[in-house]
Each structure stands twice: as C-alpha cells, then as structure tokens.
Amino acid sequence: MSDDLIQRVLKAIATSKRIPLETVTIDSEFAQLNIDSMDAVEILFELENEFDIVIPDDEARGVRNVRQMCEGIEKLVAAKGAGAQKP
Image 1 (cartoon, rainbow, N blue to C red):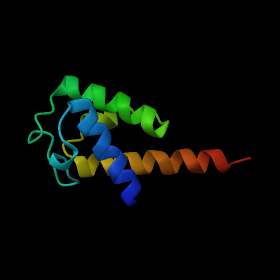
Image 2 (cartoon, rainbow, N blue to C red):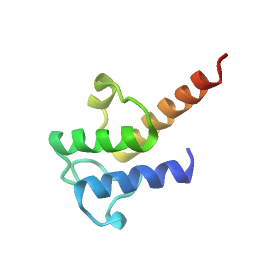
Image 3 (tube, rainbow, N blue to C red):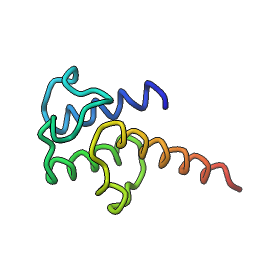
C-alpha cells in the first residue's frame, strides 16, 4: 500500500472529523477517534470524492479501523485502474 494512499485517507478522516492530522494513524481504531456512524458516512463521501471511486455499503459496514479502510480503498482503486485499461 502506497504512502500517498495512506496519507490521503488519513487527511480525509482528519478533515471530515475536524481533528488534527497527527492524531490519525494507520493503526487508529474508529472508536479511538470517536467516529460514529454519521461520521463514517461523511468520511465515505470524502473518500469517494478523493479517489473517484464508489465504496459499496456492505463493504463499508465491516470497516472498524484506518488500516482496513486503506486496504479497502486500495482494492477499489486497483479494480478501477484495471477496468480503465480494458479495451
């Protein structure tokens, strides 16, 4: 997983939650960051715009920490890139 992707996710979370960027790490749990379901929806919208992807609701429901979020976005970005390369 690229540092760029991680930093973009961390920034989106910090911006949506209006918390200092340095308080969000790859190992942060959403509960630690006081991210509730409404915050999660805002963060998902932010990330969809940031990466120009669509995050399926069923996949988003199981995400409980920043690492899982980054891994999921990495897969979606890779799948989008693979789809764009098809003739």
